[in-house]
Image (tube, rainbow, N blue to C red; front, side):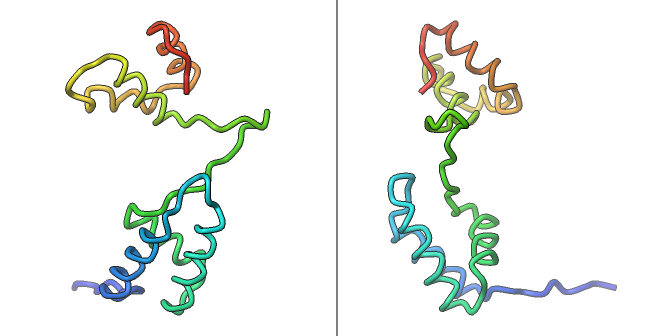
Length: 120
């Protein structure tokens, strides 16, 4: 017996959601655009903002808010550190460093220091 999966978002709605979200120019410097875009999408889709956020995340389009460190400084993500390590290594194959994403943040920062580079 096969079970059919319930479709919460029609494909044409998803396409429009992605277009509206991409057109909003969302980035760390314009947090208001994110909230406005999410509310607009929720309204035309007839869903909650939380549901829209979950759908955009599952589609790989959602850009999360940049959280500040407890010190008030900009938060540095481990993925950014791995990217920086890969760039400094000057290898053509960036996928070579993908396994570093699971490493401790302190280890990644130490590797950058060994490369004589400060974490950005």
